[in-house]
Every structure is written in C-alpha cells, then in structure tokens.
Amino acid sequence: MTPDERPVPEPTPETERFWEAASEGTFLLKLCDNCGLRFFYPRAHCPDCFSDSVRWVESDGIGTVYSYSHTKRDPQLQHWPDRFFPIVVAFVELAEGPKVLSRIVDCDPEDVEIGMEVEVEFENWGDSGRVVPVFTPAER
Amino acid sequence: MSSKEPVYIAGAFEHPTREAPDKSQKQLHAEVARGALDDAGLTKDDVDGYLTTGVPVTEPALEPLVMADYLGLDPTFTDSSDIGGAAFISHVAHAASAIRDDRCDIALITLGARMKTRQEEITKDEWKFHHEFEWPNAATTLLLYAMAAKRHMYEHGTTSEQLAEIRVAASHHAQYNEHALYQDPVSVEDVVESPTIAEPLHLLDCCVVTDGGGALLVVSEDVKQRIDRECVEVLGHGESIFHLDGGRMDITRTGATNSGKRAYEEAGVGPEDVDYASIYDSFTITVLETIEDLGFCEKGNGGEFVEDGSLKAPDGDLPFNTDGGGLASNHPGRGGMTKIIEAVRQLRGEANPEVQVPDARIALAHGTGGYLSTRHGSSTLILGSDNR
Image 1 (tube, rainbow over the protein chains, first blue to last red):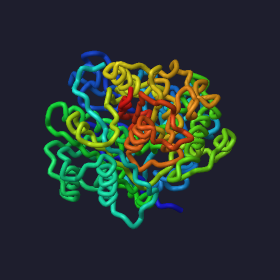
Image 2 (image 1 turned 60 degrees about the vertical axis):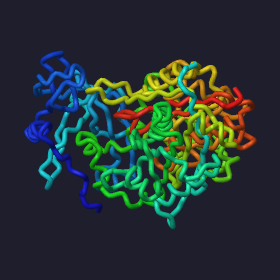
Image 3 (image 1 turned 60 degrees about the horizontal axis):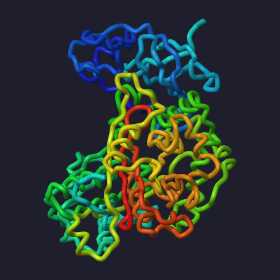
C-alpha cells in the first residue's frame, strides 16, 4: 500500500480561518462589502473591485457540478495512496455563486454528470490534522 | 500595418534530440544558441540581448544571471518573464520592443529542457507551488485540461472523435519529420480507442514529453541588412492571462480571445489572412479552444472546423503544426519555442516539402502556458515572410 504522503495544504495568514472552519464542519466564502461579490478562493481583498472590506461568510455548501474529470492514476499524483483512486476532480458551482475546485467522493465516477446536485462534506486527513472540504451527491 | 520600426527573426534552431540523458540542461541551451547563431551567420559576441526562462527547476530563478555566466554573454537587455508554455512567444515580442527602444540589436532567446529525463524525479515539494486550494484536490495538469474538454463537450456538443482529428492531423505531419518522437500516422479510431487517461481525454489526446529545446535570434533592421539570411518579420503580438476570476471563470474560453485580437490589430491582418498556424497543443482540447478564440471559426464550432482534414498541410483551410507539434514531435517543457521555429520554417519555405504551405506569407504562432480551467498565459505572435 502506498503510504499517504500527499502534500498537506499549508495555510497562510489569509487562509488560516478557512481551514479552521473546515475542521469545524463549515465551508467559508469571502463576501465583499463594497461590491457584494462572494468569491473563492479566499483572500484579503476583492478580486473584482479590489476593496479590502471583505469578510468571511458561511456557505450552505450546496451546488451543482460545473465540470469534472476522473482518472485511475496520474503521474503527478504519485504521493496519493491507491485507495483514493479512481479520483474525481470537479468544479462545483455553489448556490452562492463562485465555482470551487474540489473532488466528488462516495460516488461512482461513471455516475457523475455536469449539472448534478452536490453538497459539501469534510474529509479528515488523519495525522496531518487537516480537514479538506469535498463534495458528495446531494441527499434527495 | 504598424508604423513601428521593423524587427526580424534572423535565426531559428530546434534541437534534434528528444532524450538527452548525457547532457546537462545548460548544455542544451548552449547547443541551441550555437544552432541559431549559425543559422543567422552571427556569433556569440554579436549578442547584446538575452532572454530565457525555465532554467533552474528547483532554485530561485536568477535565470539570466546563471545563463549569461554559463554562456559567456554580456547583454545590455535581459528578460526572464515566465507565463509557462507561452513564455517564449512573449519573449520575441519583448525582444522586439527592446530593439525598438535601442536597448539591444541582437537578442538571443534560448530554451533547453530535460522534461523526459527528469520525469521520474519529480518530488512532492516541486508541486507545492500549486495552489493550496487546488493541490489537495488533485488538480493535476491532466485533470484540469480534461475538465475544460468535458465542459466544452457539454456546452457545444464537441465529440472525442472531433478532438481526435487534431491528433490525426499532427501525426500526419510528423511522418515527414525525421526528428519527431512519434512518426507513425494515426486514425481517429486509434485515438479514441487509446486508453482514457483523464475522462474524456485519451492517451493520444496528450502531448509527448521530451528533452530538447530551441533558440531564436531577434534582430533590428540594421542587422538584417548586413547578414546573408532570409529573415521573418515580427508583425504583431498580444498576450493575456485568464484565471479563476474569484470563481466566475468560463473554462471553455482561453486568453487567446484577447491575445489574438491584439496581435491581429498590431499586424493589421485577420484570421482569414493566416496561411499557416502553430497552435499550442499540450492537449487536443487546447488546440480546439484556441482555434475558436483566435477567430478561425465561431465559438463552439471548433469540433466541426477540425473535421475533414482542415488542419492538414498543405491543402487544409488552416494548416497547423506541420512539424507534428507537441502532440507527435516535441514538447520540451515550455513549447512555445518550437511553435515559433516551425512558423519561421514555413515562412522561409524550409518546412518539410510534403507539408510546406505554398507561398506562405503570414504565419501565426500561439502559446498557452499553465493550465486551462484555473490560470493560463496566452501569447499570440504574427509573423510575415520577407517576400510578402
């Protein structure tokens, strides 16, 4: 079995709060108080109007698949253990607006389709202590 | 046509190697520099401008310092701007601007890479530059381009068979290139029946990975007048960066939308004037989206456009990548270099005879660096033959 040597997300002062919230089961977006844009990935300014009056807001974590792909193996994922494959990568278009790069888990890759409703789930990365948001097909 | 002082490409050389385990990366730079200098009939001491990027893979950059020292250059102008595979296409334009501003007269641009030889040595630390919100989600090169293809298929009905046509045309050209990594022609069936690497992309939708490189010499009008070599004129250029835009991106579009427009405007030509196009081909989808965004067909119609051999030289509507391109011949990392070199060959009438476009006067070379779906640099260069 391949040991789990995946590169762990390394938070910066701009993103620490995001990862803390994820470990508490909350997916955070940034909201710009100046222009109203909800954006992802989080940063200390609005990428549209460049205001620094931005704050964290909770996302409902509900969205649809904007695009996806899956692979059984990829040389750039040599540090990912076998149990993660086939791996499904997706852009999820959140109900709040932004498209978020993530993964779809607990779903046969062949069942994933564009437009499918998904909801956030939190994947615990064991010893690293990091919790990474991923998505699963929405409960109907 | 622009009233700017004319600037030319006077030397172009592609390294014939595709695997060079016995050579250092810097050595490849030196060999291609010699090749381009010999092509133009110039010497190293003539060079007063130097541009490169992608040299030390694991150190802080300082690339012009490292390479000027190694090559023994004394440049008065240097540039190492890096927008990935599109970088060297931008370097030609940056060199042209420097020449017009009298910062240099003869600019050398070099690429040397050991993508093939180093492939097995990639450590996880090297991928840390990938975004903290992307790498933990396995956002690899393959998967990011595959997602662009998936969305294009969803919005426009593009098919795997249509993407395959792009590889078929590239391989058709590669059979005449003695240096191409893969010289066997392939069929649409061969492509769609090759293993699926990342849904919906098949193995033959992906570019090759090679060692190698290339070099160019960009020169002033004065230099052109005193050398005995057919030159190619730099007519126009545009560059652009497309990114996530806070999560509002459209992954079926590329920066070619903007870079192409600027390049056409500066050159005073349109897509209908282009006799030959080198289109960056990291994957077949890269070509398809780029062809649309450069205005060779309506957005979304790229699939229909590439059917029926329209990309095949010499008689197709848009002969492309006549060396076999990155899909079949050569992709030494930042592949924009080889895109320019084949465009120069076409305009000089020095492409392989079976794929030489008759009377090629206007050529376009386009680079796409980085990643469709997240962030990429686009650079479009328009070149003209000396006998236009």
